[in-house]
Length: 112
Length: 110
Image (tube, helix red, strand yellow):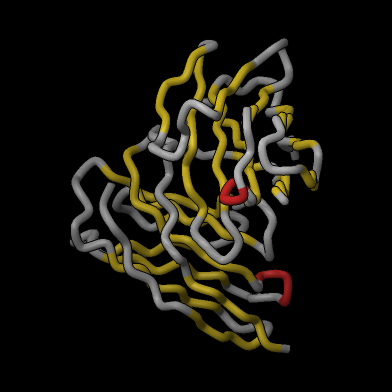
């Protein structure tokens, strides 16, 4: 079965540093998403992306966050200046717009 | 999106059918019922969805009441690998801004 892949699986960073999380969506999908899950809490929507622009974003997705599709295969989430509260699992997902989302295995971000 | 209510946790014996209920009394006419699950800390995995008719696929069956105010996910022969948190989500079709609740933690007991 096709899958969404994410790198790195775990990243440790210092507060204030920039972090880029990478995702390779399923190849024929056109809709891309980032969700996050703080340890012990719910999975939360961050942003959706279609046709090279953000289609929707949550209140969490403030100016320190950005997304990009730099080439035909990757989809990235950048956090400009990480804070302690950014520590979480970040899940990338993709969809062909039809039925449901396919999620990746996640990138664990630890901010010290 | 309409809210859903699920039991916090459930146990089921291995090999038996696991029946996971969900209440969604404020569901609107164009909203679907989706089920996802999350095994340990992995990414959520789609299971099944439906509008008003019962649905079945290779993973599970979904039974939606006639008034659509509740549904039940059925895993027909639960295995240890089905131990996970199961999320019932109500959403418009094609709206992939999913609102996850706390779900039901299902534990399959050997």
